Length: 115
Image 1 (tube, rainbow, N blue to C red):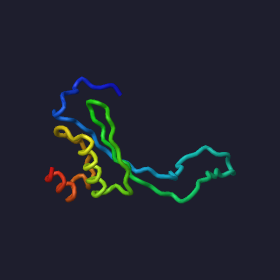
Image 2: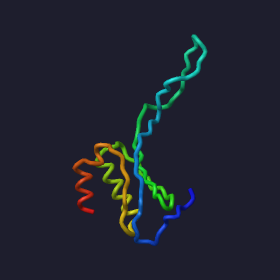
Image 3: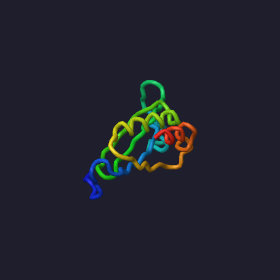
Image 4: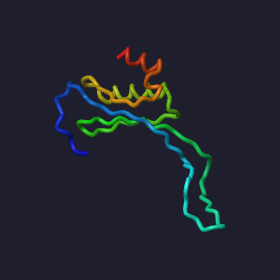
């Protein structure tokens, strides 16, 4: 990704977009083409499982910071915020979030107040 024109000197405001998703090890096949009367069998080892991926994109530089967690919840979100703050130690961050509940939960509010 090419650097944006808004790249400033270190210590200036930094705009970061944050989001998270779940990754399923064996996703469900919703629609698959198959011959009539011959059901399609997809071999898969092990059991289905999932994990969460948290990611933040620095708008100016295109730098991506990510971290995995077992679940998408307030504790994992705050752990990612710690990781994000360590990744960008110079200057203040403006973090753009969506409207998921644990972004506004008690743990997140306590973390924001501490910062």
